[in-house]
Image 1: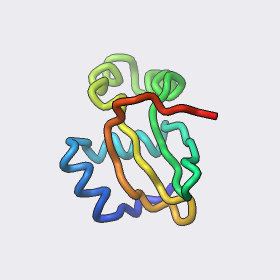
Image 2: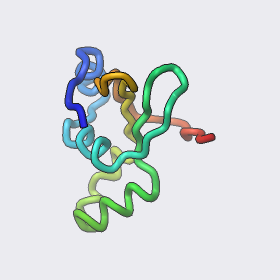
Image 3: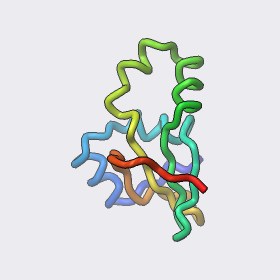
Length: 94
């Protein structure tokens, strides 16, 4: 698990109001989906939420519902975080 983050990702997380704790949760519990352009998208799905509830409890996870649609894009080569955001559309899986 790499914690190297680009300047762009830090700026975008600040602009979009995504706390560093959510970035860590995406690393620990996020599902990975390759984007086909050299990146890996991490996001929280139903299984991720259930694992978080099992580990942290239902109430703390419920309080994080604002950021359930957060995602981050990492480089598939070195694991550096490229950007973070809040998705407004579904992530389609193949």
